[in-house]
Length: 109
Length: 109
DNA sequence: ACTATTCATCGTAATATTGCAATGAAACAA
DNA sequence: TTGTTTCATTGCAATATTACGATGAATAGT
Image 1 (tube, rainbow over the protein chains, first blue to last red):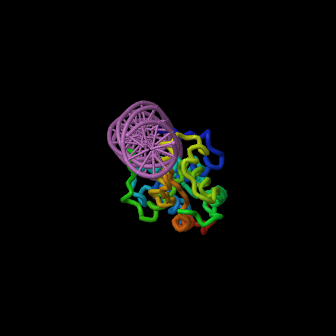
Image 2: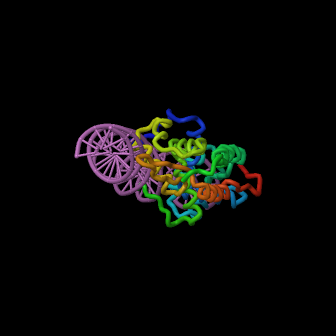
Image 3: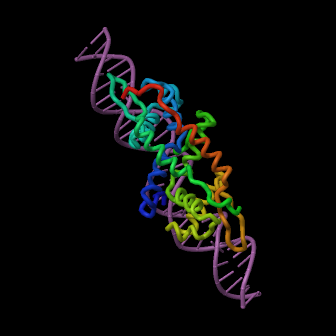
């Protein structure tokens, strides 16, 4: 039905999924990579760097902001976005705990 | 249009997004965690452990198999699933390269 | 005031995802 | 063979996502 049953999963599982979902689109990956590369903040340059229409970029930025990974502050007519380093570190810790699992046994398949 | 424009992104960006998308659902996170916890392989136990119908679990397993993260081999009437350790390591390397980015400058926002 | 620029939001179309009942396919036991 | 178990596949309904044109809000320059 297109509706995820979040209530039957743990908070941790839902958090991992929520974070991953945001990374689940190449445009958002590209936005984050660009924000990392450009040491100072960027704004509408993203529309030029990535080849998507302005409303589309704006929507992707909204999702990144919603997760708290990026912050934006207005500067005149343009808006300046950049990574929130603490939020990034926190997010990374959640994902790493999931990714760093190891098999105790060699696995039978 | 619900259709991602993969052609305008790099191979790496698409790969990161594809991996993340699979992790973007708590059921698949839960399945992987359970496969890690249970050292021997599991099959239809997943339907009981996770509270979703059998076809739903089967569909999630299919996506994990498609990404190559898990393998399944038939054992009589039941199918035994488990993590592919090498594929997991490879996947982890791709994600870590993305997650381990660091700001060169403190960031202006 | 008027215009241009930058970005957010709204509305909409196309496609994707999620979940499950129903149905198949394959292996096993009687 | 007949029935049972286990899992995959099909088909469908509900919801989510993606992308963009059109429009709106805010600021800056003239």
